[in-house]
Amino acid sequence: MSYDFDRIIDRKNTASLKWDYTKSFFGEKDVLPLWVADMDFKAPPEVIEALNSRVEHGVYGYSGKPNNFYESIINWMNKKHNWQITKEWISVTPGVVPAINLAILALTEPNDKIIVQTPVYFPFFEAIKNNGRKLVNNPLIVEDNKYKMNFKELEEKIDEDTKMIILCSPHNPVGRVWSQKELSRLVDICIENDILIISDEIHSDIVYKGYRHIPIASLSQEAKERTITFMAPSKTFNVAGLSTAYSIIPNRELRSKFNERLNTMHLGLSNIFGTIALESCYTYGANWLDQLKSYLESNIEYTINYIKTNLPEIKLIKPEGTYLLWLDFKDLELSEEEIDELLIKKAKVALNKGTMFGEGGEFHRRLNIGCPRRTLEEALYRIKKAIHTKK
Ligand SMILES: Cc1ncc(COP(=O)(O)O)c(C=O)c1O
Image 1 (cartoon, rainbow, N blue to C red):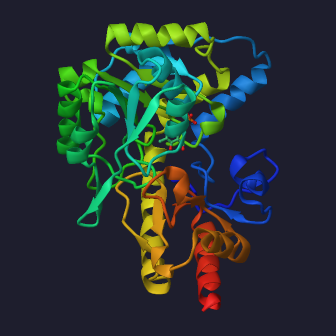
Image 2: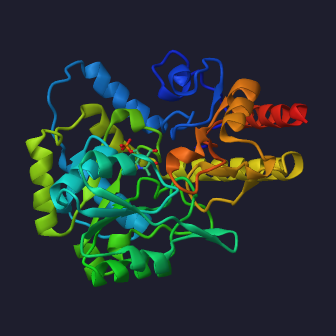
Image 3: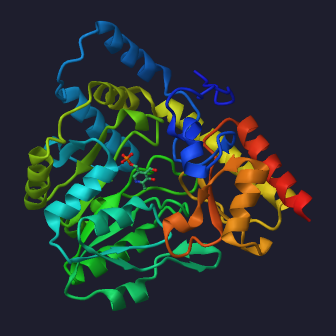
């Protein structure tokens, strides 16, 4: 079966964060939104069918997680990521971000130091600071036109108070799919310094030709013992609004501490629709996902070519994974406010501001290409027009 990703679906007035809340995030109602990380595509038809049939049942009382639900996760990990996991390692959470907060609370103490590598998904910062832990930033570096982890400085920054690192793998917003060599080096440093690894792998299924996502916990027995992995079908199948994610924690002690917090806060209850969607995504969604990735890859190619030809002032590095492009506006020689003015007021497009992602985000904007080609064409055309009428 072939899926139609070109179809424009009107998402206005559906309580969509991306489409209906731009006024509160960007100060403008009438902007084309290519910001928050969800896509403008329908979920796979089998998922919609499974949800519809449960909706029709009409009784929406408390729900549990059937065995098939866990089996679908175990099979997906095995088939897609060559990682053999067991049911007891899995805990269901209402999202990856709440789970990161829980892991910080359960596995570190106030004032412990936690490392992040900016530019990176900004809720990591809040999770560290709001829970009274100390944020240590070890920014990524760009070498040979590629973002890399700065291992040298990482080793220098670690001290006895450093207890955890939050890894983003694949990395939002720079689109890196970390290689085995890079992940192994990180694990070695963490073993040497007794540091726990929180691995946010929510983007792991959107990885392009020539790259492979490796769950860091699958690298070795030692990696497995010190890693807490977070995954979800939410980015992959565009079901983020169903608030269902899961953690994989092989280490019994870490898992029991994490689950204790999860249960104390009553966050382990499942959302019936999220449960059904996850199981059907992982059971029936593989073909849809293959076609989605081809579509996204062609959107990326289109954007790169468009920018090369029409907007050479904007620089970007082709992502290895994710549907997020990290655009560098530095060569325009404008201030942050002027870039906002240009994009939001003049071009009327909403992209995420780079500085949200911390150090290294200056003069950058994040473009979400998870949309029909026509939407992307319109957004790029508007940006071109806005930049070129400025001159
Ligand atoms: C790296 C990363 N982690 C987590 C999330 C959000 O996860 P959740 O909605 O499950 O809390 C996102 C969404 O953009 C993300 O990019």
